[in-house]
Image 1 (cartoon, rainbow, N blue to C red):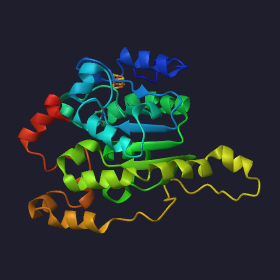
Image 2 (cartoon, protein in one colour; image 1 turned 135 degrees about the horizontal axis):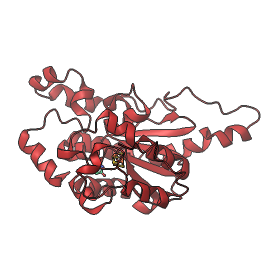
Image 3 (tube, rainbow, N blue to C red; image 1 turned 135 degrees about the vertical axis):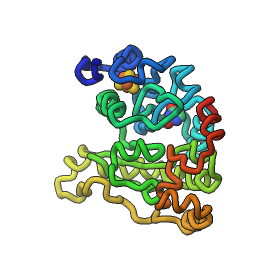
Length: 270
Ligand code: URA
Ligand code: SF4
């Protein structure tokens, strides 16, 4: 099998990369996809939004976040206010994992060059990760329940992890967190201008310093009391199964999902 890496051309534009993705056979997911989903949005966007992987609707249409999660994402952006034309949206893996399961490590690895090249080509100031899988790609030690809504630094860019909209659809408390967190995105963009390497070069007096990777740029958004309360209110059977609040609340962590709900999700409800 050819990996995306070994078959790579320079992919000198977002469109060239998208074409490569559409014909990619770099991992096993190519054999079950209907359409690959390279991503969509403005190639001039300052904000790159990264989900986990296409779901049913995305696989059908070849576009990211076109199902219910996408509708919530649109609502969240509208509150800032922003629209899809202001951002670029893609996923960690570009082809739908069967049954909407988590992408396997070798699938994430095979698809990695595409996301890396998208980062280079788009050169976003802010990377917004949706859900745990996407956050871990940049912040391997992160915990979504602690790090969502924090403005972090990652290799000269701002990393802004959010819960996955699908988790918000499932859990009203998470939806409220998403609604609250997204209001900080404009501030994340402002912070990005202060941490960009270019600006650091410009400031010869060293006024702006590069933070350690993943260190919080602001401390204001520590774990919120109501989030802890939500965690405490969860049934103890779930607490026993998933020993941390992170495991309970993160997405695509669907520990509390019944087989039926999983089936619904597989049918593209999320
Ligand atoms: N969930 C994702 O993670 N990505 C999509 O594109 C759609 C749903
Ligand atoms: Fe290629 Fe990525 Fe699709 Fe795998 S998931 S076939 S690496 S585009």
